[in-house]
Length: 156
Image (tube, rainbow, N blue to C red; front, side, top):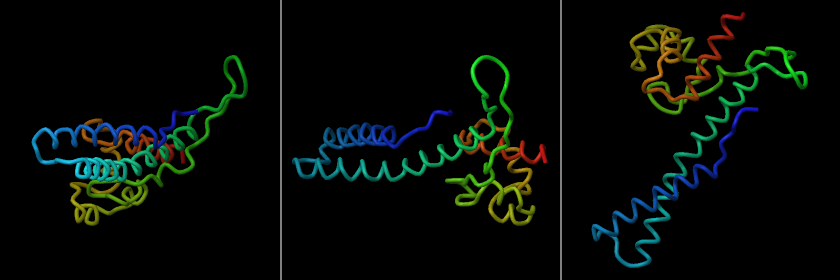
């Protein structure tokens, strides 16, 4: 089973960053008084956690797709198992960028004109192939799903 992130990690990160930001605002004199400090701390935490929650959920979608494509063990020892194809890596959504809200499969199906209208330099199929192959400036979980999606197309 692949590791799944839970929202506890996102909550801890949000709390750490909110504390740092609030501390900086206190030291610059921007915040004074307990009510102002507590209000700023809570508001910053809530804003950060609201952004990180969907990222955790997106990561977990990719973990599920990776599990579906991993060899399944038939029991202890060596060998055994079978390779299953991912059930839905094409359903993983882009959570930002020019294709925010679109699934990998939707982007893959875009014509060159439609993809360029969204800001791409190529058609959707080429964009997904490049995205899957590029480590720089990409979301690792979406990139992994794009690789799995392309692998399902090759198997078909």
